[in-house]
Image (cartoon, rainbow, N blue to C red; front, side, top):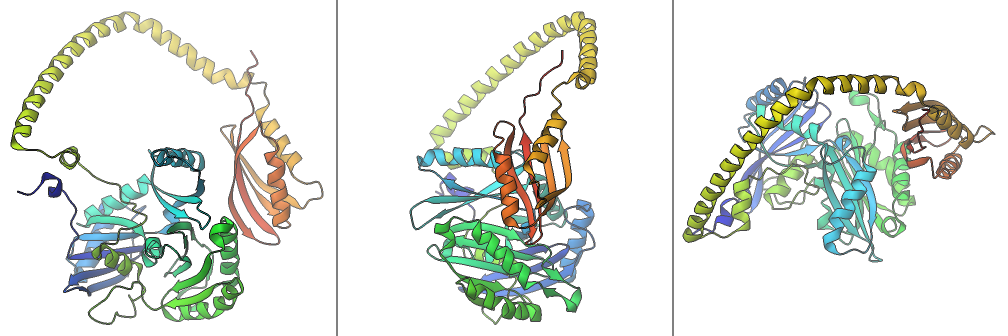
Length: 486
């Protein structure tokens, strides 16, 4: 007899469709497991007219289905590489806590560091252990509406997603090199992605915008900008993690990747890293040599990893587990136990029906009471609306002026830092962008703002570009006490 717990157990399929989204560029490859090795069956590379994120789900899904049909692809199960620019990341040190309390600590860190809560963000995490024994965690979040839109498009395309992950993470799974610090650079058609792994986990993820210049065959990569962003990324990591990054791997296709590898090698070697150009996206064994156009495909890497049983990390597909599945997974039933469970369920249904009847009787009585007090409640609600409407006119806290005064006092008088734009939302969220002579001047500005501990909180840098001058954008929460003038 097969245990109930095994009925719902996920089985590794014999074939899968790997998909990778790079802007409106869709890459697809069907991989099949055959006699201990893998086989590439069909491939597809196409530019979509409709964006899977912003286009109509039915139309976008039908467009994808049409392209798959034209390529002869019938596989329904798929593994999808999400664009890295969908992902929000947060790096934090994990204090010494009982293992049962770590999840709660990381949830609090996520609520403090991300702009929204778990109701709007689907979160995953990756843990790394430094040589000193300290634990670090990288929290990754993707907007749930992005995932819902993509799932709707895949459903319209008659596809069943088995996993959502990141292409750069599929190229170099952190769990396969737990003792090695590694920088991975993934060059796509329209994207440039960076991943740093150390201590058995992901410690940094970045999508580098603006590093590609030109169009079509005339594209080139600004190696100066890439090298600067790499230095910034490593400089933001704890020393016990960044010091172990001794190897860099570049995965890309065509002459553009070869030219960039030549240009960036000397720069990375000056940082103490040995550069390796990857000629294929996965170390899995295939029955034939891989075609050059898909050899470095993230879609191929994610599909191959799934067929080999290598869990996607991070896993970004929200779980869909039915209540029955949870019940059977958590219990081991015999026929006698099922009979007792059926009787108990019948008794529960009877009790619930009686409770609903009593509740309906209570609701009927409360409705009568409400009808009696409704006119007075309506009058009070109108009065409250008037109070809310005119209350801002009696605010004597001068909140906006105090915010502007604090910002003005924080900027240096000699003009080494200047503001170009200041935005104040809801009298609490302040966003400021401008120019700084150099990074030292910008850091001095932030230190000065942190001195206002009673008014300024959650001070965070959103973007930093350039070096001299340095373009910046930061935001903070204004915590000044709002008083009433009544």
